[in-house]
Image (cartoon, rainbow, N blue to C red; front, side, top):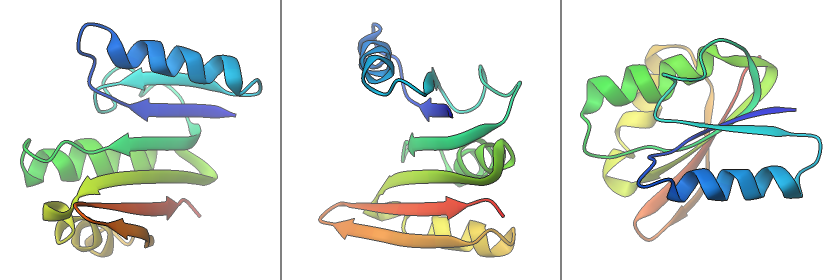
Length: 118
């Protein structure tokens, strides 16, 4: 299984968490990247992203929805966590681009979405 996790690396903090994940899940390779900039050379079975809210709708659309979706293998899944302020954008972008998205869970302040590549 190839897993791609978008993350912001502040002094290597998240990189350590990703390395720990790799030791727990034996049949997976987890890679960290800000957006897709360092992982766009292959396809993935699973992409996980906590989308930054303050980078603007265009950057979110292209870098955190369209590009990761295109990197999914058939039946690959993309799980997205967003702050509630972005709940208007995720379904809109997915519908415009004919991407099926499902709201999985909503909690105070955050929502989780799942996209499955056909």
